[in-house]
Image (tube, rainbow, N blue to C red):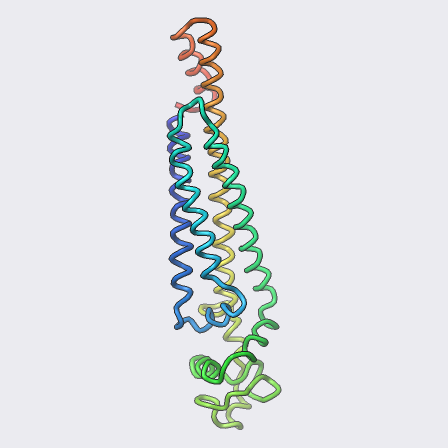
Length: 239
């Protein structure tokens, strides 16, 4: 039981760390200096996703403390914790899938996002990545801001569009950014799933202990109960 409790506590700490990471990341993603993230945020509100997931994860760890400290005879809080973990898994899957689905439609989505941006935003992107327009440096290719790097029309027409830079699989491109985000979110599912299984094991161990205790009480023995419990733990590989 001791080893199981250590594993359970480690997974509980992992869930708490995931919650803190979600909230901190949400705050960092809201910074205006991230140009690509600023474009993505017009479709996906990472601040809401991060704070929502982070707060629910942290609440789960707060619920786990009285649950694990409750008496062996009472497993109701541990069962409530597992129901909460099911809710967390569902939320995590929903948010991760939402980001993943958006990543599959990047090229078309970002052309619409690009068209909605102000001249100052488009100029900043064009100057930073040395590109003109979205598909290419012509009006048909999405060039509407003839400022900065793309001031000269002839020069701009010979430049590549910003779509390859915006949706790049390399940092800070959207494909790189979105892949890391939804992969991390899906990774939290592993923590939640393992924590759920560990909690099930704790509940099961408590039920076994209570069952043998009741049998022993009916038979009026003391040492026999401890002996049987020791045998069961040895069979389960628990010290």
